[in-house]
Length: 120
Image (cartoon, rainbow, N blue to C red; front, side, top):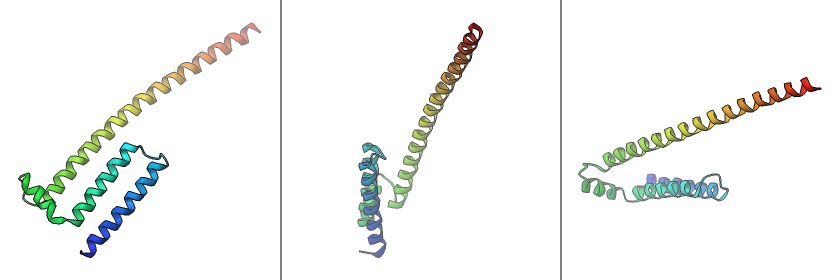
């Protein structure tokens, strides 16, 4: 085993442990933790068996393993950007709703205070 493979495995184990700790503290959801753990297990397998990635690539009609990794990475990044966009849109709608409710409540509070002051 090459030194870079050993380093890759150590880094993978450390990250998996950190993800598990964050999941146990409920800092991340179980689904998110599972996705990160599976991703790092994949990385550790590819570091341990680099020729296997070439075999996967060849079976998909891609020349080299690194090309497959780049294509796969780009697909994952596009998915994550899309997911982030949806989350941002949802948060924007929530913020708009909250701000509208606050504005209506403040106007109602001012109106009722004005009516109460006039009666006294």
